Image (cartoon, rainbow, N blue to C red):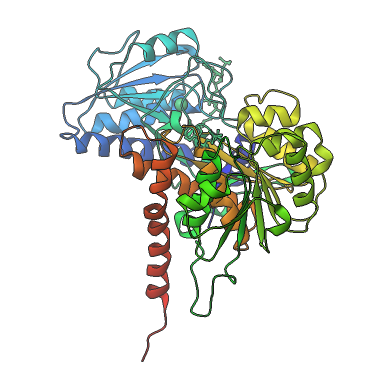
Length: 491
Ligand SMILES: NC(=O)C1=CN([C@@H]2O[C@H](COP(=O)(O)OP(=O)(O)OC[C@H]3O[C@@H](n4cnc5c(N)ncnc54)[C@H](OP(=O)(O)O)[C@@H]3O)[C@@H](O)[C@H]2O)[C@@H](O)CC1
Ligand SMILES: Nc1ncnc2c1ncn2[C@@H]1O[C@H](COP(=O)(O)OP(=O)(O)O)[C@@H](O)[C@H]1O
Ligand SMILES: [K+]
């Protein structure tokens, strides 16, 4: 099942639909219990709860209520818990009573040496950046202290993931019932996200009502990488054609083609003036300088390093004029930005893969804080699939369904990494995957390849490419295991 990320309104609808659980305070008690358990587990991992010190920063709403009830529970486990009430007259009254009854202390400042600081400033109701007092408290936290956000790091927009300045940067975020959009869109700000079951599963709403965008991510088990069947040959698995690079700039051609060769079995074709360089590096590639001689393919990738001159424009027009799946990247996007009619309304599968700058070129406006709305908007307007690159990759199809992927690290932010991504996604298109799945699966494997290649050190795109095979192997061996586990008994 894909992992879903809901808006604040959708979460509140679910909470309202839970009826008595909400009004009777049960949801909040379950949420608080979850927070306390996660913090206790963190303390137990490093010596135990007894005698440890936790600080709680409490806002004016229910997010502060969660934090106070959690603080009370930690007090009962022998933790020293101090709270700063940011709006003392509006702090959650039942939560505050429970906190004080359990031995929690309140004051104007927190002790200097804290094991954990709890961000109960704001959650779903938060707007804008952290206000001064909370900002000062979090700015003074030392690097040894574990920062635990209740529901969301305060200062992060629940729906867009916009990280205001200042905002809390959490090591751990504990959320309730269902993930919020910011948990993916602002994943680096949230740290590890722990989802606590508070009994909302039966009342979670349908998302995407009225054509509004939905956001989800593929679970690892859903990455169904193409593997050859016993009856397959080099043609039956989908042949991908790469049009990239130039005689003067062969690098993009070599990287994109190498990624396609590595991503799937079968065959990769290449068209472009860098054909000799490509074959020198990848002798298995069937390469030619002329599109007319290319031979048959099941999907095209074009754009990286191919230039934007008249010849490139003519090639783009020819390729987009076929009824084959097409991935357009880099220079092809620059050409499309000049003439959107090339893709607008194209009925065959079309995947555009811009980074933020190329996205701005395509739309004529800078990408704002709401990346999700922007990418879903362009996909709907032109009836194509758009993959917006970055630490959080978003892939939107024309119906407003968006798949997101957090790369988990940023080692892939290196020149040529996008060429590698285009080769991987193109190979998946040729293998028959939809543009949305091809884009999302490619982004996942690309990110994993970067992590494996890096191991904590800088990498270039060639090293990333060398991490691709081990990364794919993780997914193919996982699905092979699943097949064996679920196969009926031979007897
Ligand atoms: N509903 C449920 O059943 C459940 C909900 N649960 C919990 O409730 C949370 C939602 O609670 P909520 O609706 O009370 O809003 P909340 O996030 O506490 O913030 C609102 C207050 O913050 C203030 N404020 C706004 N921006 C600010 C800023 N930048 N900096 C500082 N202050 C700011 C604003 O007041 P203002 O000062 O603007 O008048 C307002 O009063 C949710 O995230 C989850 O944790 C769980 O218990 C599970 C069950
Ligand atoms: N901060 C980042 N963290 C993780 N991945 C990133 C980050 N920035 C870019 N990437 C990924 O690296 C690749 C860069 O692509 P692109 O910008 O087109 O580079 P190039 O044109 O040099 O190949 C994309 O796959 C993108 O998603
Ligand atoms: K919070």
